[in-house]
Image 1 (cartoon, rainbow, N blue to C red):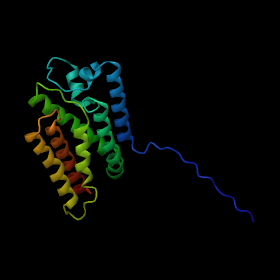
Image 2 (image 1 turned 135 degrees about the vertical axis):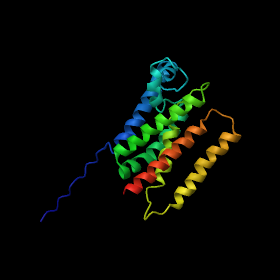
Image 3 (image 1 turned 135 degrees about the horizontal axis):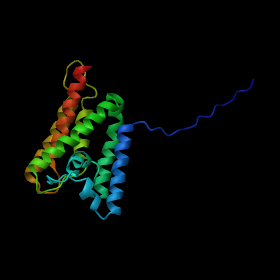
Image 4 (image 1 turned 180 degrees about the horizontal axis):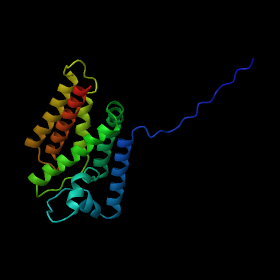
Length: 193
């Protein structure tokens, strides 16, 4: 008798279509911004008050793709790529896409209305939505996971504190709104199940 060893061939799989597509678009937007000397971010990937510009409506969604620097992009994409695939597996691509689009639109509109003198760009609101959504991943029997409470206190509380005490170019309100949207979708998804 002869034993044959079967060879396992490793394949790369596109395991998380929403998250991977999002990350690739962000990378493409960043490279485009470098090639255009910052013009593409201003034209397509920043929310700012421009009432008569038809691209304003595209920017309400597209601002989450633009990033101001390589470190801004890498920080957001690292968290997105760590948390996102697990969420996409748990909640499905459609639901995660809804969370992403809702976060982009709501943060874009809020920024447009309340901060007319500054531009908004980046995926931080989406990342915070994913972080809070992930704390609902193991909810059981109507109980509130302690991890959710801790994450909410640490992330949302930290954003409130930073918004009050730290003056920087970070949109803490966007982070808070993203966290609230993630928590809301996490709660609703678990109530449905």
